[in-house]
Image (cartoon, rainbow, N blue to C red; front, top):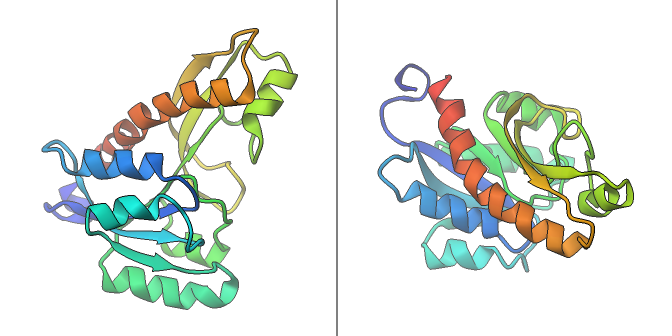
Length: 192
């Protein structure tokens, strides 16, 4: 860790699009003694993302970007100015450009609600139930230029019950996401 990112805590930006429960969880993790990160900025593609309320509550800088290709330079400049070294995607519903990913190669994490490489993309819970899978789960992985295809850092299996609906399964998986995302950050940083 010290060799790669310095001995201080790593300035981290969390990218969100929605309710921000993983953001809230990462902020709380960042405030613990064992955490190697400081959440310095929250970035969203939506002004109305509910998760921005957590950033306001904890007095963390907020920036809204459309995330079209014209935004890349502006976003990268902001991240550079804030000395951001790690990006955590947490319910972020936009695809990052190849150029952006190259600038932060190996330093962008994403949490996905399935056991990758199965069920990449959207509507994972519905697809899992429709295929009568016995297990689903969540995955924290590095982001590369292919959708949900980067190196897997950590996964957690969750049993699928016969009476599960998409929302019931989603709630149980979300609880596991909150557990493994901080663990994946610790694992990634200890390997750097």
